[in-house]
Length: 410
Ligand SMILES: C[N+](C)(C)CCCC[C@H](N)C(=O)O
Ligand SMILES: O=C(O)CCC(=O)C(=O)O
Ligand SMILES: [Fe+2]
Image 1 (cartoon, rainbow, N blue to C red):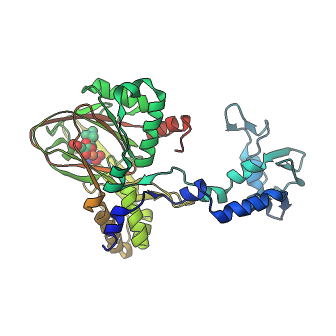
Image 2 (cartoon, rainbow, N blue to C red):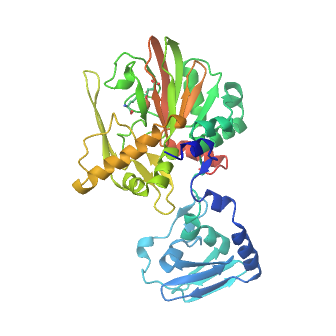
Image 3 (cartoon, protein in one colour):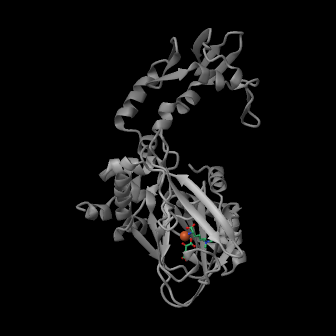
């Protein structure tokens, strides 16, 4: 690919919307400045209300406005929950009166109920504003980008005692999809403690905290000495585990390095170079499956979804399912798409396998890695000798909730 050199030199890549929301272009700044002088106005039309505010003209649906009324009878601001019965709103509702006063839109509905909205709240919460905003800003990386960023690891002592250290750790985790804590005692208990500092542990069929070695105690190739190509875990869950935590407690032998690849960086390349492939990966649902039939474990899991999950309003990726071991029979793709789907899958595989996109690390006792399993793929080199890995999965919702608690965009 002619771009491979460019890619090594590439600036950190941000998903769409980030730049727009964080750093408005000069033109936008000027038009905002101009608009700041002009008074905001509203025009009630037949099927919507048009608001001119901050240099932008935005349409608001009347049912939406009634549904989002923040008056005490419609909304409980103590619990941040809606009280209004949306099922009782007339779908043909229109306000009898609409005015803008002192930064507020004031609507009087038939029957006399009054709704007041601050104009800035409306501007922020409009579809048009969301379209330009990134839900989770990220820095997409290949080897050089990640190395040049010099992202620091957290240290066990400070991590356990300082909330600020956890905040920095989470910020790095959100931006890069991987983050490390060093100097952790090489025990399952300490690994559990460090994981719980971040979030709630997600118990699965593998246990709460798991500790595994190459003993084939489970019907899965992870429990062997074989190399594992890059993949996401639990792709066969309807909701794959959000975070994977690994801590290598012991390795007396050779090999066994961990491979990390930013799946969104690779998918972004596919989007740039082959939009049709990207579209297929984002639209065509496939199945992953885990079937285990042993004396001790009986499991049959299936998870259905596209390789890439993308928010439809801003085209931001949020989940990649890529596990060629656990990919199930494909019978969800019509004949006229299947050849093109394989070509699209190949385009993604090609990007994922570029050596310049690979980050190899040797996990050693003390070094705990957190991996965003919705974004960053992991794999491992084959190994010899006794190798003991412990870890757990974390619930994504709780990690993101902790991050938001620190004021981070997640
Ligand atoms: C991490 N731990 C060893 C507990 C489980 C491994 C699960 C491996 C499975 N093939 C998957 O990719 O989901
Ligand atoms: O052994 C390893 O380093 C990782 C194996 C693996 O992919 C997993 O446990 O999910
Ligand atoms: Fe894995």
